[in-house]
Length: 406
Image (cartoon, rainbow, N blue to C red; front, side, top):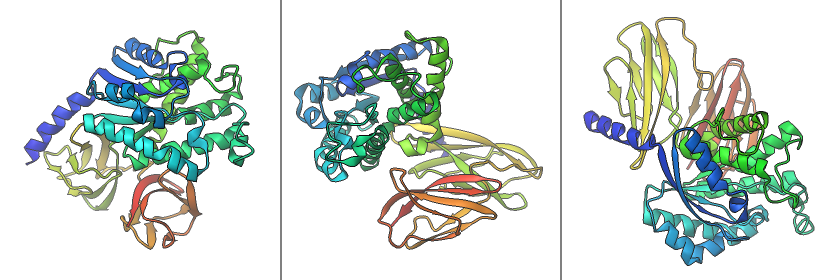
C-alpha cells in the first residue's frame, strides 16, 4: 500500500512542477487593460516557463453574463485548463452581503460547476480585484462602506474569499497586494489610471506578479521582465506580490503541505498536519513512513532527521520538509511550537494547551476576526458550523491552524 502511494506521489510531483500552465481568463476590462494575461506570460517566459492562455473579457462583464455567454462556456469546454481565472464586474462583489448573495454567488457557482464538469482537475482561481481609488462614489449614498477605498476593498476581500470557500476554489489576492502597496508607498506608485478605477501599468504589473506566484507557485522576485517600469519599482512590486500570496496560503486556499511537531518523551514525537487531505504521506528519514493524518513516531536514535510531509489529491501533490533534531538541542518551528488545540473538529468550546499565551485570535472562513482573547478555554457555542482559523501567539512561538465546527 505504501509503495503504491509513493509511486502516485512521484507521478503527481512531476505534474505539479510542470513548466507549462494552460490558463483561461474570464473577466472584463480589469483583465484586458494593459493585457494582463500577456504580462503574466512574459514573467513566465523570463523565468523559463510557458503560459498558454485564452480569454473572454468584454467590457463591464459580470459572472452573471459569463454564466450564459456561449463564448465563455465554449472556451471553458475547449481545453483541459490548469486554471480558469474568474473576475467579476468591479463593483458588484463590494455591494451589501445580501445583494452579493443573490447577484454574484449563484453565477460564480455556475461557472465553477462548468469548469469542474469539463475537467475535475482544472482549478477555478478567483481574481480578487481592488477598490476604486477614492471608493465607489456612485453607490456611496446607498451603502456606507463604499464611500472609501478601504471600505470597498474590505467588501471585495470578503466576497471573493467567501466564493473561494463556497466553491472549494483558490483566490489570487490582487486586491490585498494593491492595499499593501498603497500602505507602503503612500500612492507614490500610482496603481490607477486617470479614471481612478482601471489599472495603470503599475497596477497591472503588480497583478501579473500576484498571478505568476499564484499559478506557478514561484517567486517573481528578481524576474528580468519589468515591462516599462524602473528596476526599483518593479522589484518592490515583485516583493509585495510574493509576500502577500505566500504569507497567507491557507487564507487564499492554495494547496500547501505544512506541519508542526513536538516531543512526547525521549525519541517519540507527535507530528501535526496543518491540512486535511484524504491522502497524506510522511517520510521520517529513518527508513519508515506513515499515511496517518497526525502520526506519532519514535526515532531509532539521536541525530537530525529531515522529515517530509506530502499531501495528495486526485490531481496534484505538494511536499514540505523540515529538520527534526532528536536527542540534541531542539528548536521548534516558530509557527508550530509545542501548542495543542483540542478538540478539532470542535463544538461548544476550544481548549488550548500552551504556556505563556499572549494572544489567541479566532477568524471565520474569510479571515474576519471574531474572537480575541488570552483565555485558553474559548466558548464557541454561538458560532455557526463551518471552517475557522485560529492564531495563537506565546512568548516563544506562533501557530496558525484550520479548525472545523460541527
